[in-house]
Image (cartoon, rainbow, N blue to C red; front, side, top):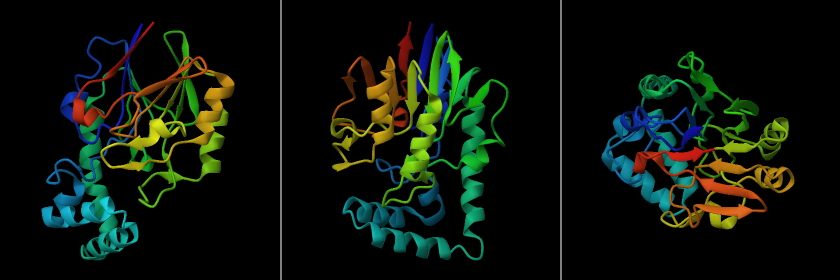
Length: 255
């Protein structure tokens, strides 16, 4: 059995269409939307709507950790769109989702990232594409558990939830062979981004589940350039499956 795993797709539909080649199934750990590309500020929904100069200014504020100023700046731009900025965002997001969901092979199992809009996914999921969040499925005789979304941060990305709600989804899984989440367990080496030079939020609930349940694997993404891409906690192999938008390569899990 061979399963390919991707995360942080961020609009990369072309490579996504090939991500399942040679595999029995594809697993996607979220962040399908490309809102703003920190490596190419001409790409994404934000520069599409507001232009390159505004994208450069927003990223500069965020990189300087001036998050309150970044939020105020962003709000002023959204307000400039008129009476219904949400409609403009949704239109742009839907264009990306239509292309990305069409690229998923059959079968694909996926969960949400912190920059996804879960309410829209029902309009694009189809036979052979299964969305799971706080739920399990069997793939090749192994139980895979999925936990989507992220925890609350100063970035205020679209799908951030409370620690309590997130922990309840982890607890709902029970014992699994492969624990799949968008965000990593709360381990410094796995949550520190060496390029952004900051810690992303990891999950204590995921870390507790790893320590107590000892799944064979814990797979995740979210941190694009982690200090450590993998480590072992007890008998569990914890693996950041990679920043798919940048590499175009899935992580392969075989048994």
